[in-house]
Image 1 (spheres, rainbow, N blue to C red):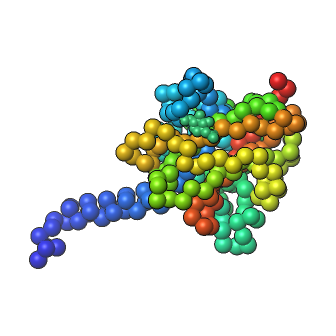
Image 2: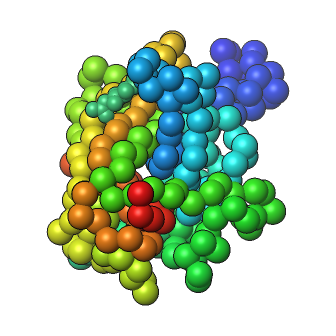
Image 3: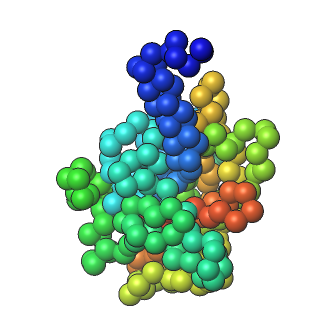
Length: 243
Ligand SMILES: *[C@@H]1O[C@H](CO)[C@@H](O)[C@H](O)[C@H]1NC(C)=O
């Protein structure tokens, strides 16, 4: 018989690869990798690769150098956060992951107290976390994310929306409040350096903050829609100062 001729070891190997394949496709979801990406040469900003720029501001408690680019969706906990889409409806879902709720709970991206406590410190594993974004009214932000296999031609291109809170909120806005203040829609498929591995294509978009933005801290939500009912978010604070 075919099966009896296979050793136990090779069966185990096949099973393990299947599990890996399945988990990979399950975990292939995007998140904001950088909130303030700056191209080394702004006149030649045609690549989102690490070779052609650097990050000057991150999402809350973003672990630096924890994994190579694009691989934090399989971090512990996974960085991508999928909002609840069952009950009552996605627009009432928790906007920033608290590490417990959602279709796929993510990392702790709740507001720090003070706001800066979520930056330039250590995460729960003792890893260094990224700095807060400092910007100004009307300032340009370039946000980067990994394609996670979803920027290929046979996938629908649905925009990333960027929403803001007012100045110095005591707590995070609700999802409905964020939806009332969308300041930019970015092209999810604006990716570069498209090598064979479509998982790790770097992508991103640039936009200008409103010119009349008040100074102070603002919560910023990155939100990406996949399929018809999956929303993934990342949350960051912006320290908006006078130019
Ligand atoms: C698309 O990506 C490029 C980098 O290749 C960037 O310079 C450009 O601003 C992006 N386009 C938009 C509309 O964000």
